[in-house]
Image (cartoon, rainbow, N blue to C red):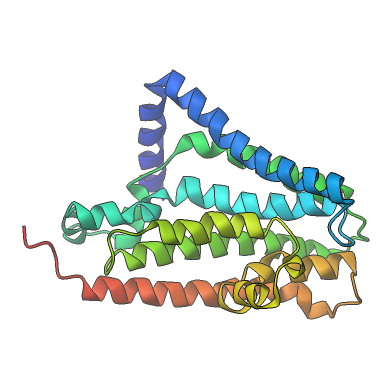
Length: 259
């Protein structure tokens, strides 16, 4: 881990060499999350709400989704840009080093300016937790922790899928960005507002609904949900395991650039 933190420190120092660029990137990153939440609040104000969901509940949904997305964007940028290793033949260099490939890829990139978006997400998250009407107990505390960890695991799994597909399709990575960024946006709203087929896909195939929607139903006691709704974020562990299987399969199929 000391090697990983040293690599992060190097990237931070390099970003501070161009301070004006860093500041502008920091502001732009923070404003991105702010406008996502602002658009939701404007919709609620215009149409009188989203079903029976209150503003602070939407803020909590946004906070959890944005926190997982922002954290992985910052610390998992190496996987997110892994296709460049394939395209430029840099993976061959990593393969001959006596370190785990996944670890080396994670160390290959870090974007510190994403910290603005991450801090903003934490503020939304804390505000939502404090203001929602929940009678807290130990189990519900575990549920909210699982939601946060589930969000991290899910978005990490998505960038792992993106990196895995680079072994077969170097171009066209924007499709995976649609799932990652679009997933963050769609899980900032209750998933039951979408068409049934759409909600089913993002629950049973890519489990965004399992991270935010179902456990929050349990916390808020909407519709008398069963207690196991609070455990649905654990599905992301299985999903992540499947993504690692795809990643390892891709590595096994890599034939080198021949250079």
